[in-house]
Image (cartoon, rainbow, N blue to C red; front, side, top):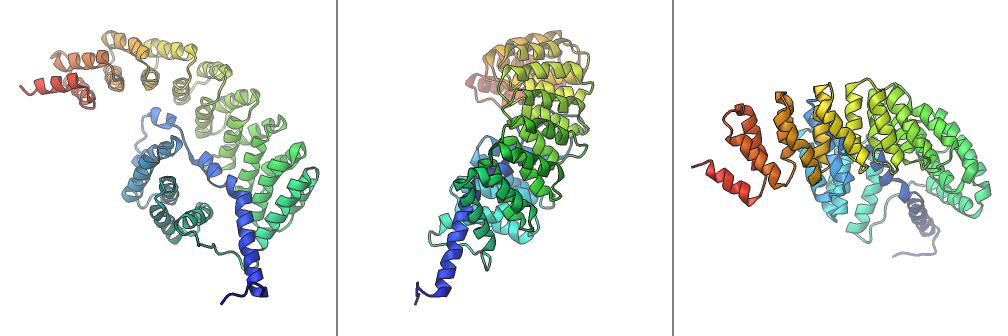
Length: 443
């Protein structure tokens, strides 16, 4: 029998209430921040660098792209396949988290629970464990309305977060000073992470110097990343030079202060952020950071992005970086972007750049772009590029592309390998005319 007025039950109810309020205080920061740090656009698949034979990496990038496009069913299938095919890969814990995330989005709560349980059992020290526990609370609550999460014995962290949130909401002018005291204390990482979030939300302009200090010098990497992200979210001009400084670091990982700074710059509303991303892309000390800066910059709005991409193409010497610029131009609707791609496809001195330009043009999926590519096939003399053009034609659902591929298949003067490539492209089409053509080859 339960006695609501006993001290024991009052304490238990307090703990549950503390957990609920703390969860609400932090809910907006869990999945989106992790998704921002992990997700990668289709550019990494578009840029096909020679020597990249890591099948596991390509599979993971493809699965991540499904999350980015919110194709939850395809994402779940891709991550499940990744976990099955690459059980020893270093990213299995991340794959399990995103598998659960995708299942949860589909309301497949049992599948999400099973993936999270496997992550927490097999990788208890994973960087994803905290996010997995948070997601598991959501999943379990949906599976069982009577579910009550376990909390720490004294619920102290939750109570501190609740108190700090209430004080910041009711006294925004004093929020920065209160948070600064918490950040200098010996409170837990969880409390300090919540403090950064509250500082960004309620601290106003006074929060920026504090965030700058911790973005530069916080020894705990996770907290430093949080400070950097929150600093970028302020959209304060004072943040830009600090973010540039961090983004120029010679060390880079998908989850690192360098990565967080590049993402913060990409999300900053100031037009100057585009110039700084271009500076990172041109002069950064880490090649992956440089190409990632181009990748994120190409997704921003504004004509100044095209200006910067065109400038970068002429300014950077490395072919690999230029390829990312061409891939970025594929994202832009500005006519100048397509004109540059057409120019490179026709006349660039480097074959890799011409092939990348062809891929970028085809990736736009616009009928008029086929008019740029079809004439190139007949005038081109390089065998590899001609094969690349056939592969590009295969991306169009257009009768002109089908006719060109059929002509290549039927032309006995064409090398047999190119005829095979053209036939392979046609085999992917569901067009009735193409089907009849394939049937005619059997006679």
